[in-house]
Amino acid sequence: MTTPADGHLSWSLAIATYRRGYILPTCIRLACSQSRPPDEVVIVDASPDWQVTRALVESQVSQAHPEIRLLYVAAGRASSAAQRNQAIDLATSDVVFLLDDDALMHPGCAAEIMAIYEADREERIAGVQAVLTTSVPAEVDHSKYADIRYDGVADGSFGRSRNPLHRYGHKLLSAEDFIVKYDPDRNEPLLPSALSKFAIARTEVLAGMRMTWRRRIINQVRFEELLHRYAVYEDYDASLRASRHGLLLTALQARICHLKSAGGGRLSRRDVAYISSLNWAVLLRLNSADPSRAERDYRRKLLKNAGVDLLRDIMRQRWRLPHFRGRVAGLRMLPSIFRRSPAELREWYRAYQETLVRQ
View 1 (tube, rainbow, N blue to C red):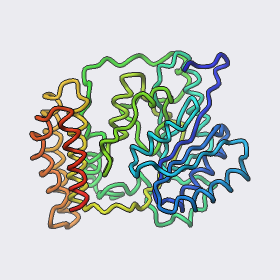
View 2 (cartoon, rainbow, N blue to C red):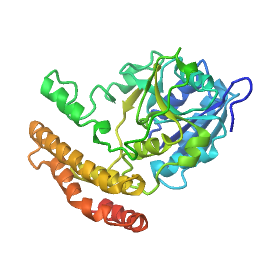
View 3 (cartoon, rainbow, N blue to C red):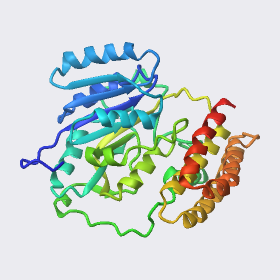
View 4 (tube, rainbow, N blue to C red):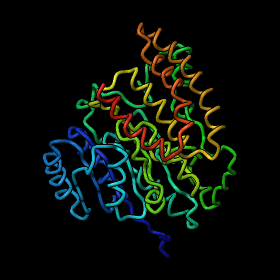
């Protein structure tokens, strides 16, 4: 795929969703109402009552935006990674906005991101993400979502506390600080000069709730479907692999609000800490250019995070120390993960995730 002579690119809104019928229509409405609306909307829904939400969305889009192609389908498999891949397969545009179903675009968000892609005539950009804001778009009835936390405001156990120690702990627990790079010594390409007029920043990863991709690149990279139970870090994994094909940027004037909507997970805090620790170990073993270096670096990261988790558990008066215990359990599994071959690891981890969910 090459940029057309006139520079104009099309974009698709592609969403993997599950039990979010109360917020998904709002997400779609704000996307379709952009000054630069999508050419198509692709929804892959794993909800048991997905037909109900489909009927609502079909009515909404057909009445307000009949020019936008809508494809609303049932998920082939209830997994965020598999659903995202299914949506990518169905999309036909040059750029895919793979947003979360509770991500709300502010006016002008799509236009800013698409202008960046279109200015990159050499196609050196692989993906662009919007910048998070804690303000809900004015077009949204705020009272409907009064009880939903906003990402970046009350995210994590340290929340909005003015206590400097709390804020420092929140920073230490950020997902970005948890990540070990696949290719730490790779030289980063220069930014195209045509992008100098934009407010942008380089980024190592695109966050799942606000990421956009050149479709040809994300179609090649895909999301790792091995993470089929608790798929935390699937976006970071895809980002690091995609960065081998091009630049990753944050568009600082493209604003999006992410509502941390309640999920339907059954995992305990201990299990979340444990599985998230295992996930990144597995991804490092599969994709790192130097697995031995990756294991050493990741062990240091886990040890530090275990200490922070211990502090968090104590400050939240969780005397069973669920986050800390989960992290320590993950540390103990590192030798078993990194000693397996990629083929053995895939077979083992696919089955092991099932046993964790059944416990």
